[in-house]
Length: 339
Image (cartoon, rainbow, N blue to C red; front, top):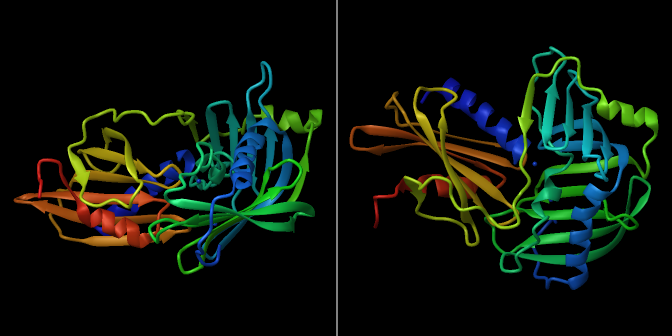
């Protein structure tokens, strides 16, 4: 597969994953605290039940962006709404109304958005944290955006997944800051409020939520995560020979390829917090090639699997360390091949 074809496919895959799908400087031994579990539950609940507006910065590797957000809580006969406006570079905007996402770049040609809901990290913890693979620890009190915050650590028990630092507002439990790091303590992503107002929104602010962008590049229907993982939609024809402990197959589908005439087999794996997808499609170039890339928390690995005269393009994409993605990619094989 040529480099241009790989990059086009990666742009399509990463765009979808970053929308549908979004931090501890060294991993230490810790026992999960019941208070920490309670705080995590409150964080997930407050993100939906409270209205707020503010500005925050988002760092992804060496890139830094400033954004503003308005969030209206769900209420009787009122669906949850959110508006995110990019304040740097070309004008870009995301509006979420219920289960619909509207994207607009105001004809500037920029359609790659890093955010669907405000902070994908919140959605990661809605179903809780498995103590088999992560520890939770309350560190102490800090200040973020002029507000007192409780610092909570989510510590992985191996090097195959990331760790998180979460600063939660001491009063509301809203997430004020999140930092994601790898097993060497390197910061991969950072999201931090610089200003935040919590409470009832004025009529003028609410009007901004009801105003759709003048030009909508794309509209996407989003689905809430089920309480229990759904069974795979399609019996998979491909499998992974290796997975980090705790990752299970949540879904498998077959979809049209964005770059070729062939269909793509897609497998989605998750440990309840981190997730990644495996895409496999027939490759007509018959060139044995390999590529990898990391953009913030998102790792992407592409390789060619050969079986006789048939070549298949294997891509692994997800919020896992690059080394983990590479090891998964190398292990992908047809289901019929058993050791």
